[in-house]
Length: 437
Image (cartoon, rainbow, N blue to C red):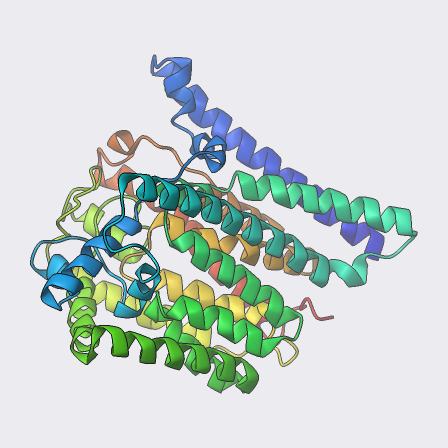
């Protein structure tokens, strides 16, 4: 039975690769049928970003961080650039601790050197994410790797190669790298945290996610998760790194800037983004209600306040977090990587602004879900559909969002994430066949 399960793992990985290939071929064929050139048609597929893994990244995160850091130096106010001028620095003050080692007034040569270094570091983060996903699969699937040494090695190697191919073509991950997004590093820490949690290194897992929390404060939800699951070693590592980082940040930027960040969070929760890469209920509703520009990015403006969007976002966020934290879980899974993955999914999906590259951190979660799917018959196609929706993109927003009803389909990454979330909840339930059996 175990050997048959391993063969099923490999079949599902190959099916996932084939499905994604067919989706992207269909996208290219669609563009060709519209009379576009082959080069233009190829650019319609999310696979265009895979070769970009080897090129210098853009500066999507560093530019607003530099503006906020400069504002702090000149005016003592980090969020002046956001609240007064619309510059989209949406991180807490602790994120600017990353700017400290950089030269205050770098030369052109130093800027290029820093840019090259960040590009290489981003590629390393992508590799760490993929390796962690493969290691998670190996750890969880190990009980099924029986038979001769050569048989085990060959099948394990085949699965790892397939996971590597899927990772290198996973759109949210490759797009995040191309943009030069800090989210790529957070994804690597998240992937490492899941692996460490499964290995029983709970404090180290907490440290990794504590570092993420210093940049994405919604990860503070993990404190409640750790308390409910009695994961005190995780909580110790998480809390120590957050308190240390917060202390350094308050010392460097002052308490006023940290209190002002609460004003920023309130402001963002009341507005959100209508631009199509915002894959959240907030983005979906803003686009459907035509409350802002869905096609073109507005670098200095957010979607206008809309009461329907605001209250629906708050209600959906509360529901997602309630399901993640309070639905019953199998005793054997509490505190394990799958249980941690549920709340990590919820923290992203419940945010008013969840850019497509934020879902890069879901890649190792799919590795966990694959093992659960093989051991829980009847749910594999649900997982495959989820992966196909999240990992691919039609890069023709002017066509997708030309009509509000067709535009609903443009939130497919969010819908795929919902499928994954529902799948994880179902296999985490006490009555499910779990991956621990």
